[in-house]
Length: 256
Image (cartoon, rainbow, N blue to C red; front, top):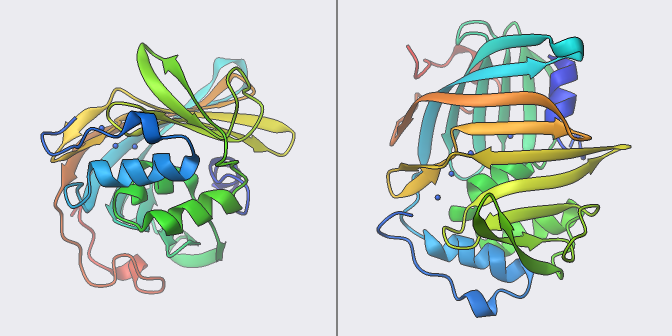
């Protein structure tokens, strides 16, 4: 679990969501900076995007020689800023808890490690629709994204806004946003000597927002991880302590 955790969490011990009837057309000609893109994402679904979501994730890790390892993860979101992942089964005691820009890792029901964490996929895929855009801008800036650089291109047949790089430059840290739906679709980010490429694919409606039920991770162009969401629900309520460090391992689980 520690090896996979290190891979998934982008630097700073430092993971999906887009045309409902309530979405608002963004002012395309005004999106010249990363700050503008983030603000437009927030405005497109302000007051409409779901606050809670649960799903059962089929997690496929790709190893050397074409080997794969498949497990089920049970995940829950309470936006903004709360994500819980139970690995293997809800009763395993193996869990990652993201809360208030920190992570708490449990093994067998016991806290194994904790520390500050900014999770760009949680920020860009979900929190952006609830959090203050000024706060999110500050977080993305601290993760090394140059918000002064924005350009447009076409990705999988759709126009996207690329924040953090000039046209044709895939080297800097950057995130890509569907220009019509205003949802996150791709992240390119350095991890030491390696380069990670994360993609949110196959968007589907979920309430007045969206969810991407397929997420893929590539390192230096090699597919290393696939996440496939099933039994996706929104509008859930959670038991007391479900997202609280110390109480989470014994709190009643939504899947039960």
